[in-house]
Image (cartoon, rainbow, N blue to C red; front, side, top):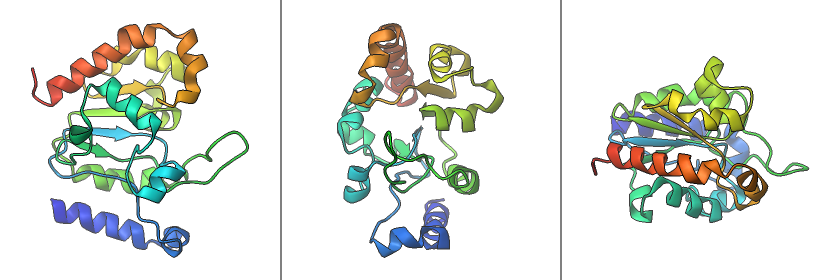
Length: 196
């Protein structure tokens, strides 16, 4: 199964649509193995993660690991946690933040990659792009409502707001998230990782 995953990612890397990234020396920013139990599906790597090649290598990642209740060594152990963003490359900067992931990327590559991870029990869906794609008609009218209804998607999926420190206004308006959602996320992660 590891060879299958490697072959898919090698094919993805060599795809003509990613020639620009190869020309810049960039590799796909992702992580995973055939034994991963949890998969983190976010938007796309930021510039810092693209440069370092390490997913969630920023303040958002620190906060995400805190929400998940995992140590750095657990989060970065591909035997436990996979990171499969909606696009494996930094999409560039737009007027109000990073550009969105390419629309055709996840439909083309995710099914093949996730097929190589048969032991995944929990998909953590971070942000509207991942939630719209994976929850399809089951997502609510907006991200806040989808995250508030997280219990409807358990045990296999857990929608989250992006852990960016720039979302401080959202957190100030939605205090229920830290009080109710984060503890349940950490509990679910602990169960999947076999802690009890």
